[in-house]
Amino acid sequence: MPDPLAGMPPRFLRTPEAARFLGLSGRTLEKHRTYGTGPTYRKIGGRVVYALEDLQSWAERGAKTSTSDPGHGDVLPAKRHAAVSPAYAPRATR
Image 1 (tube, rainbow, N blue to C red):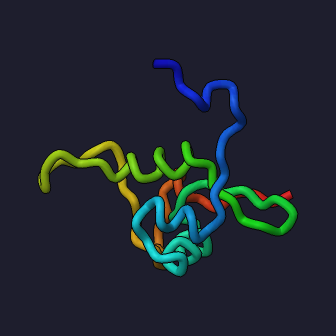
Image 2: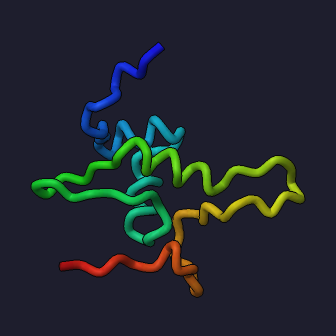
C-alpha cells in the first residue's frame, strides 16, 4: 500500500503535541530545549515546532535491548550537564 503522506511536506508539531507524541510533559520538553538535550526544533514566526522525523530520531537514540546494552547513544535528562557531548552542543544562532 503506498504511503498516503508520500510527497507531502514534513508534518510539524507544536510543543504540546510533540510532548504528547513522546509521552512527556510539555514542561519537560521545554526544559530539554533550554538545556540543549532535546530533539531538534525550528522557530517559525516565533513559534517552536518539531518535525516528526526529528522526534522519532531523538527517541531512537535511547533505544536499548537490555539494561546492559550500551545502545546507539543516550537521551540525557532535561537538566544542565557539565560536559555535553557534541550531539548536544548548543547550536549557533544567526
